[in-house]
Image (tube, rainbow, N blue to C red; front, side):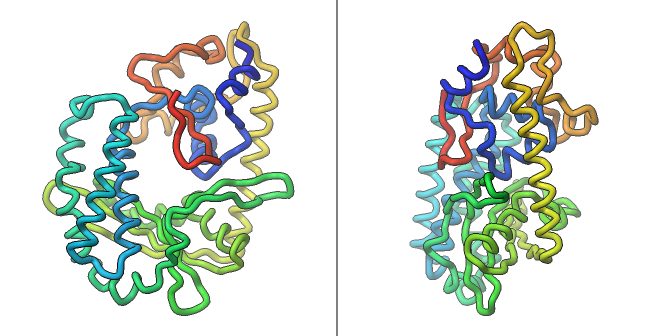
Length: 320
């Protein structure tokens, strides 16, 4: 199949991007190709649990206090979203390792939320009254150049006293590393939020990372604040546009690529190898090694994968 026909059939616009797709491209262009063009992914308990936790947090932040009624509504929201995600994955509970499901157990969500409410009991006075209910789980686009848009999703915004708005971003995990707070200083996604608030809403902002680290016995809910200077924001914008120019080159080369080519001369795999072994290894390692020209395999779905296309302009993934 000609790649242009594939892109049109699957309604893929490679120049529509958000922080996640652009970060994937920066880490490894071939990874980005497998995820964005071919739509390959694997059912991921962590992502499903995280998506459902976001729904629970929306209920919590929209409330006046973390009382029993709020917790019940949050559990219901979590369960609804998690059930939807698990159904879309089209696999059973036993597909996932027990070490993962035992820690991030949907049956323990009420316990997690009670712990969260206790750890952040001052939110009732210091945060909840200032939540902008019109800015909960919103998405849109922001210009990064005259002819380029970048898509974003905001978890929440608080209008705390003073001139600085606070963007709240929920992060879940199972380990609290020594550099947990520091990593968000370098996050393309978090800096995008500063740019959105400055460009679209003419507000200077800071970011509140609202963490949830789930463990078997001692879960914790850390928070940290990230700030950026105007110079750091300008550096981010320049580097993002540089990255987009590289992406445009790969897209142009892809339009010239053929199924008959021995190798696909664009969206090259990263040569550093560092991303191939991080976080337990790259999910595309085997097919990356086997398929020197992925265009020869557009209609194949390797064992263990599902196909879900991510459109940054949409609110949900599309299931193939």
